[in-house]
Image (cartoon, rainbow, N blue to C red; front, side, top):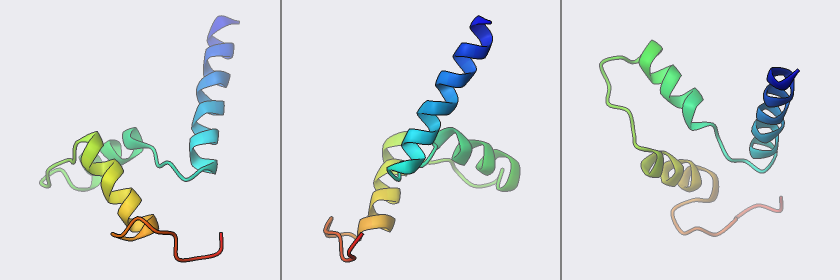
Length: 66
């Protein structure tokens, strides 16, 4: 029962992060290890900054309506 609650909370947290556009670092790390083992893995800070720049541009301003 406790395992089921824990899993549900984890999935809800992941869903909330994806709804607001925060990518999963652990998914990125798994992908890099499996698909690109020869390439270095970014730190969480590098990953977060790169995703923000990809979404909002290097100026940090939103250039679309939504």
